[in-house]
Every structure is written in C-alpha cells, then in structure tokens.
Length: 124
Image 1 (cartoon, one colour):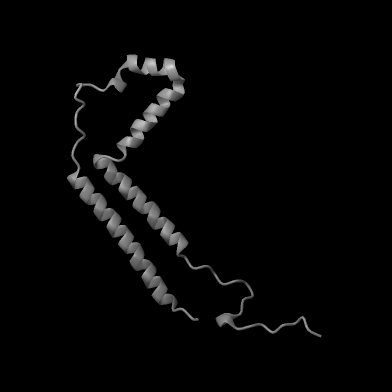
Image 2 (cartoon, one colour):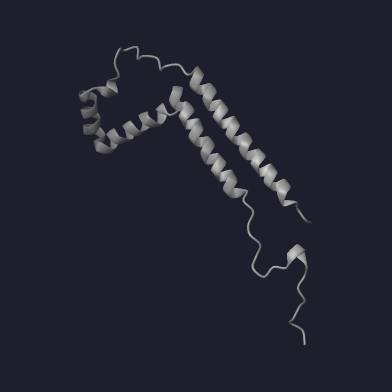
C-alpha cells in the first residue's frame, strides 16, 4: 500500500492547526470571562498569619508548610486568569506531543523501496 506523503503532511498540519486554534481560543474565552476570586468571609486568610504557619511547622515540620504552599499554588492554577495560562501551556504540550508522535520514521537502512522483496541468499 503506497501512501501519498503530501496528503499525510497536509492532514498533520490541519490537525495541528485545529489543536492550536481550539486551545488558544478556549484560553482566550476563559481569560476574557474570568472573574476575581471571592474574598474570604472571615476577612483574612488564616494561612497568611505567622501564628498559623508556626503551628503547622510545629505539628508537621517544614515539609507540612511546603506541602501546604504547593497545594495552594496548584489549586490557584485552576481558577480565573491563571486557568487561561494553564490551558495555553497544556495546549502547547499536547501540540508538541502530537507533532512528535505523528512524525514519520525514516526508512530502514537497506530496505528496498516500495516493499519489494530481496532475493533469499541462504540457499545453495
């Protein structure tokens, strides 16, 4: 079966363009419609106080404080304008993965063109 390389290349470009347009378009919509995070009803964030951080460090050590900061950072990636940036980054990673996975491999060294069989030289 002979495949037309030009058609595969055109399909590859079309799919890459669709991935890019869908990702960037949705990120733009998210960015334009994002609202600021609601304020804490207590009027302050307990995690910002030195007393709270000290208590966390006493009970769980520095790892507990670092884990809490990492969790807060990771949760912030999925809200508001930062979600739009996250979607752009994920789109670019997906596009890169697609382009690498869909790149045709070069032909094997010594392979005959168009699938022709080589004569068998193992006989007498």
